[in-house]
Image (cartoon, rainbow, N blue to C red; front, side, top):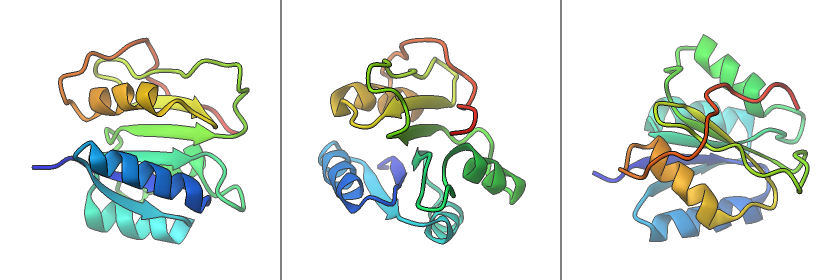
Length: 139
């Protein structure tokens, strides 16, 4: 069965880029552009991983949205890759760890590097890289 990934970003270009690239790698990809879309998709479609922009239009994204989803019943063990243009472009990504649930990438990001974390987080047999098992704080 294909692993399901929900990509949440208010930038259509990012959504389309990730949808195309992840679909080509064999994933079932859903997208959402708003907080409302996210809640509808995450509970209805039951993704194996969420790629979540930290800043959705009105600061509706990232850790706050993730925490709200958990308060509404989302499994806190659902892996999340947070992405943000607010992360210093010179800062290397914070990778997932074996058994971890989170990773953080600045925009623009290297898709091939992110793909390693995606495989790690969905349990596809790719070893995880570093130590980062806590979600990013704020924006």
